[in-house]
Image (cartoon, rainbow, N blue to C red; front, side, top):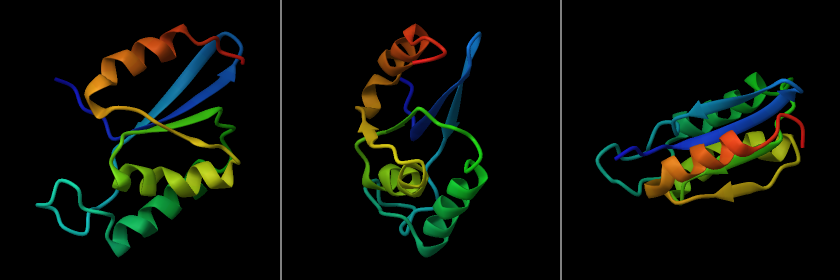
Length: 105
């Protein structure tokens, strides 16, 4: 079974779409499945926002886990996008859905 942390999707070129897949940043408690981000993880989430700042994203997807939403949040906010929360058990469904999206929407 495939699990994913979060997906930042970009449809930049008319002929081709790009998808960025990013694992959540560092957890506060590495052993707790529902752990939130650590201070270091929050800094990494802010850095991700800066790194992708020049990339015109069209959508941001996360799992139901709050730490994935914390990781994607700064990037989504900076780009004026809402975060779409998807079920971590349905990564294949999301991948299939993204394949069907046109490069330009």
